[in-house]
Image 1: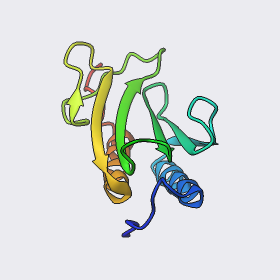
Image 2: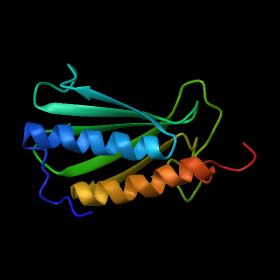
Image 3: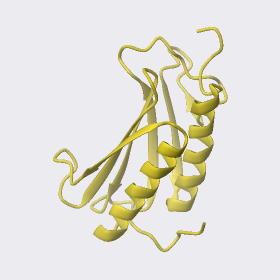
Length: 133
């Protein structure tokens, strides 16, 4: 679905974008919590906190005050109690030392949704994590 008219500049769009990300996550069994106007970001933002079991974590920010709008930096990390590690196939840049962080950049909401759908599928089928860890 092309949603390229959605932008973080508009409050109603931020709410809709967050709701769509949360719905997509939930459809793959990933927990998502929408945080409208979180104090750490300010009144022109909405956050979605994403978690998968005791493993993967991600915060997606829709911040209308960002200098570069409608670009999303995804900084995946592991829960503090997790002994999981990201696989080589997960994310653009998996930290090669401890494998507990992965980073990628999405341009626009459509790209964000495509990337998240792929990553959520990897979480659901286990391929996001190293085997035997």
